[in-house]
Image 1: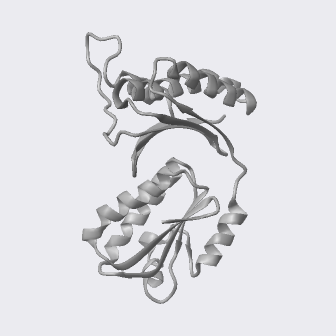
Image 2 (image 1 turned 60 degrees about the vertical axis):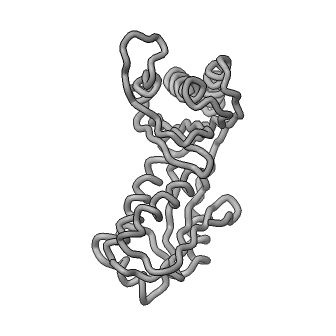
Length: 236
């Protein structure tokens, strides 16, 4: 993986088989967790042991569309992998014969993004600061109807880190054409738990239940040093 301005380039080499799919998927999801403007996947040095292994790119593209809402472009020259990608199962995957062509497409398709972010300590006041950041974002970007849900989602995602991860965190609010994305990155690799437990005002999983009830969609992705938990609110 390497940076290409505000894009990421993931280079795959060797013979891709079904046994490699899980590892490739995790590595590509970690690329998405960096929230680049585009993910370019260079397949010029990759061969196929099994054409079914290409399904990993369909799955990752589906995640990229949900969050962080970025284009995922494949660079696959003819005649090897490029020919396999012509089949009906993979025809929806954006494919280019050269990395330069993919770069140019990503440049032309680039959307103007609005981003606010803040570094937060795992302390009790973090949730209040998260609400302030979310409110500020909605006011700046003229989204009055999203002030309340965005503030709630940001507060609950940050509170989840304070209660369970106990690490420094980065809150990032991003406005894209159809969605307002709220993401919190922390230093704990443990999967967030969606669970209601009776008898506690700060029950484990309660915040995520509120996020699920409020957001259009939500989820999480692994990173090299922890995870990102994200949620999307639809822009009317």
